[in-house]
Length: 173
Figure 1 (cartoon, rainbow, N blue to C red):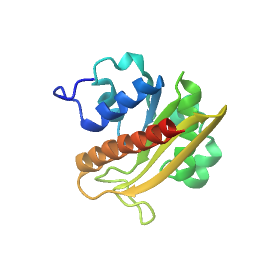
Figure 2: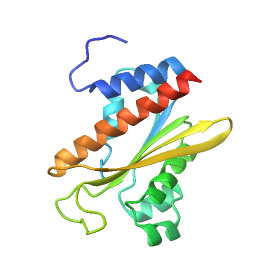
Figure 3: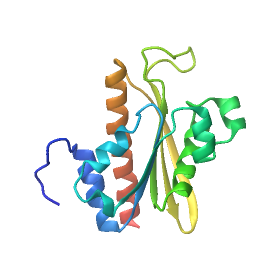
């Protein structure tokens, strides 16, 4: 891969692409608050068809249930913006795709929709992966400051940085 980035290709996406290609792995995405921006960032990298499998924007709870098999009970008990939901999304994105890794997002980008427990800027990110025949996932909550665009942009960069960490860890095995 060239060192010079093409217009529209962000550094984290280029680095993830390089790692995915060198590992011979594929990635899928399932996004809520980022609205497909993670998938767009990855597919902006030329040659992405070799390592990008599927991108889903599951904005509604019904879409999360239908396409990612997030349980209704999980959504009712914990809400869409929760560790439990993001973990189920990460596994669901692996199952829906022919992928080795998944990257998922669910959050409150604003300007409305926040609550005392989950204020605007609360974003859960998750990363699913296949390891020794098992589906595994990690999830982490973030609290980003700023307007809707800033929260979404920070979510994309952080999600891709997390993917890079997971790929580098996988590479070290």
